[in-house]
Image 1: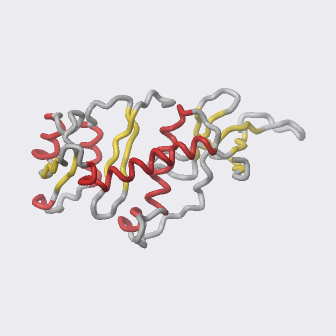
Image 2: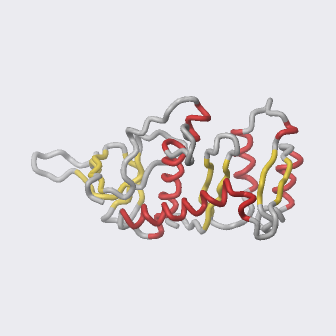
Image 3: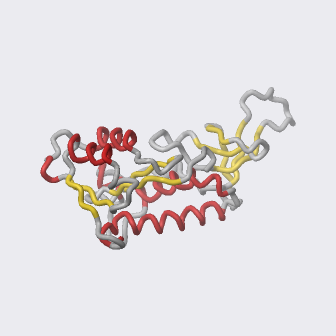
Length: 219
């Protein structure tokens, strides 16, 4: 990935089916990330006898003592390991993984972007999935189940489309070009959608911009 990422971690809330994830530089157990996630998302009054987590028996997670202690001793989760080669027992996660990987390929190909930009496609897909794509047969998205409100999608634009970014430091003259050309890479996870990530085609650097015009027909 653009920042050295080689993999991602994915969580699915069983009740809302909302997806949570983060890209990672290595497959080392994400103990610190998971602790922050649990502190932010597990209510203090949540019944401790009704907490459980499904994961496979791979050494990356199930074999990590620190991660098991975090889940079992700090947050009182019951660990439910799946059987060997029984991926269907954790279908809530295994199925989205296939969908996410396919979506990332389509988003990169549609925008003619390098593979190194896959972490941005991952984050943007989770945003769209949670906001507007409920599972088959469901009527509410993950975000709507959590908040009770539909997400405003007016600031979601086509991933990889061309953007024209105003160069705010350029001295304005009547016929001077005061914009830069780039590609839209979504938004920072958990932040305002008023700011957009974009890659400068001239330098290859990823930047965060506010004064953007989107050419969504160019894809």
